[in-house]
Length: 590
Image 1 (tube, rainbow, N blue to C red):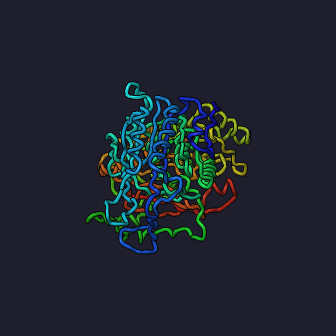
Image 2 (cartoon, rainbow, N blue to C red; image 1 turned 90 degrees about the horizontal axis):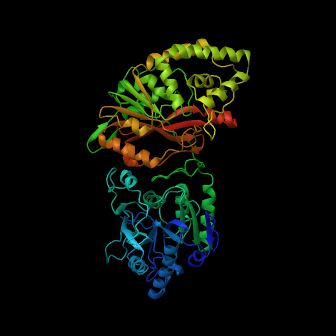
């Protein structure tokens, strides 16, 4: 038996290759075998021929590897399923794709091999291949068998039941968050540009379909066997979920595409997946295109949004209202100080204000004295805000003392305080570092340690200026309750009439104390707020110079999307001496 090397695709026949692995070596299997439907006429549709209901190029799969006699196909199916039964642990699962052409044969083969079916999933494809002959119903689904190897007397397979209930998918009109997941999955078959960047496959599955299988039946660290790797979609989904894989592919051209695709994935951080995954697209550069023009307040004021017979527009008094500048207390990554007034003018009226990704809290200053709930998951930051509210006198005194020590022991004292902060996470030290580091940029390394250097040409904000700013902020946040918690815990307190402003970390962020945002979970939270009738605005993605960081947020979640200028990217200027104009998106559900 051969030793298993994880995260490789082997250019080999899967049956022969799997036979060399020891039994019970894998936690999961995902098989997308030939459907054996490359028979009969060669149907296709050219999108240049305009006809109502046909939205693109369509072509029937006609491949030699997908054309076998019935007896050969049954023998082939028995062979690879037999190996999967041997290799997959009783605690694991086997997922097999099919259509009415072959799913019955797979079902019979599983019964003969005593592989027990857990569920048959119907994958409903709203944008399925049209029926060109007009002699039968349009096939709008595929079948997926979820099975296990333990048999009816040894049902030890992993089923993430509670997670399956909690999941919701903005594009799925059947699944309801908090309700049991049904065996009909409403998932469009369209693939993102990122999924097709290196080439396509005639039976390629969308990543969000594969991801759902993993969310239900796997966990990070598991090892998955993929006997029909194609161009590597299952491999990509598995890696993004924090798992490992071994794949097989016999077609050299598809094998090459898969290798190139996986090679590009090395640039990404593999974290828990998302149903709507555009992380790979966010850093793509646009060629021969200009940055979209920011909408003016006049355009914003007159913009109409249609939803049934309802119509909303910002009140003229808000679009022209002047707000005082927001004092710079702490420069958190992604700070909205430069945009704060423009964003504030877009807010509707509300009873309470929520800001669950607090950071530098620029909008808090402009919503005062309204009652507010502000939160973040970084404890030293929340401790700092609590000092601003409740103990500003001591904060001012401690800053002055540290600043004086810096003047007599420059720059050594800065690094003494930095080391102390990384050991103790003291908010007093955070306040000092924030006003004496290079350009005030809060930055952490991969270990979560503050790692920005001292600003050598400046010796920090003077105590008198710091006192003035700290007192101004302290006055503004007296009606704010601060919490250190996950954003979902914070917004659970919101009721109809409240308003939530989201400014989460996103593509290009250097704020490393958080992992990449789980977009699926986040979109589900937004969808739930919509159902509750709670208004929200979201700062997210945009453009940095020629870099297109736009994310494809599900269109049914929001009603309006505008771009707001935030000047030059200070981080890019400091790190690479490049000046890049930044425009950021503001999405609103009202």
